[in-house]
Amino acid sequence: MPLLHLSLPPHRLLVAGRGRLYFPPAPRHTRLSFRAAAGDAAMSVAAEAYGLPFPPERASHHRELAAAVAVVERACRLCVDVKRSLFSGGKSILEKNDQTPVTIADFGVQALVSLELQRLFPSIPLVAEEDSASLRSSNADDDSSDVLVESIFSAVSDKVSKSSSLLTQNDVLRAIDRGGKDAVSFDSNPATYWVLDPIDGTKGFLRGDDALYVVGLALVVNGKVTVGVMGCPNWTNDTIPNEKDGSAAACNGRGILMVSHLGSGTWSRRLSSEIGQSTTAPDIWKRCFVDTCSVVHMARYCIPDSQTWDMIPLSVLFNSTTGESDPRNENEILLLSVFCGSLCKYLTVASGRASVFVLRARPTTQIKSWDHAVGVICVQEAGGQISDWSGKPLDLAADLTSRRIIYPSGGVLVTNGALHDKLVEMISANYK
Image (tube, helix red, strand yellow):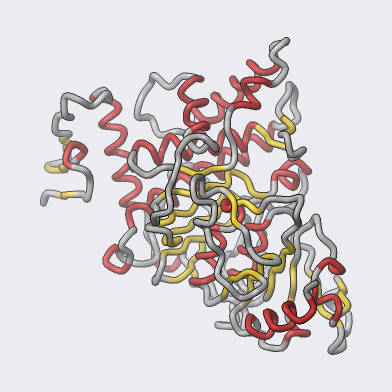
């Protein structure tokens, strides 16, 4: 059997020969045990072997993308398992200072992703939505906080790669905080970092119905979004046909995984039914394209659940209807009911289900980078376009020190590309 050399750091090189695995000794300074190092290398093997729709030579960050695919699939399974037992007993939901809900799954996904990425890419920081402050302070006068932390720990330890048997609750809390607001400080130089939204659409996740929610992970390299993975466990196969090839869009069945790499396109496939189940069959991946609509009033639109059509400048020119089968004239547009978070809307545009997603910036609400970063590359690589309402690209580095907030002028416009310039012109002319 020929030797197999993987692209790993020198102290994590894995060599396979004659059916055996050999792990060279780790440097003395490392704090990992032999077993942990073996687990890390095994996770690297799994990531490298994770079937992607294009070869490594076409993607400079192929290894990062493979690892992101593997961990997002694990995170989606965590969400499904938590949702199944969410209301079975005990406290499982907190309310943050901004009155948005956060669940075991939000914290669990962030801890899981943080742990896995830190093992594989320890030098790349993480920017993510949650921190453990609310966990540590929630109902400190009773046992509910301990129960919640234990539930999160249980969810994570069941899904994390088995690199060490020494995972503790404090490890999980520290992993959550690795992505928190005080974890890393940037400067004005272009930076490389991960951006994670553990669950985009938590309100939909809590509703217990088929409202969509997304686990979204992006890699920003030197200031540019380069890699993106979105997992939506309850995406269904009732898709609008993809006009590019006449087929059903991207994914048949329940659950979708969408991946993008700069210059390599956007692709999707069904979520694996089991954790860690990977496949390299080339025909399971479907190339994603935005729709080809070029007539403004014939396009399919979506807006945030918290906003109404009359808040969008286009409402000066067009009425809206939610009836897809209703006849429409040139003064009326179709507004799709795509419930919950922003990433769900990006996914909908990138898959060809919708033509346009438009969001209005409001003085009372901050627009967070994790609600947009992975969506940006998925739509762009599917042929779409993203800008603020003035037509300028979204600036993920506008928040110089933390990279957590973006400041789009007027709002965010996500389109299939063919409609973009027309809509920027219409919005600019009617925005007050």
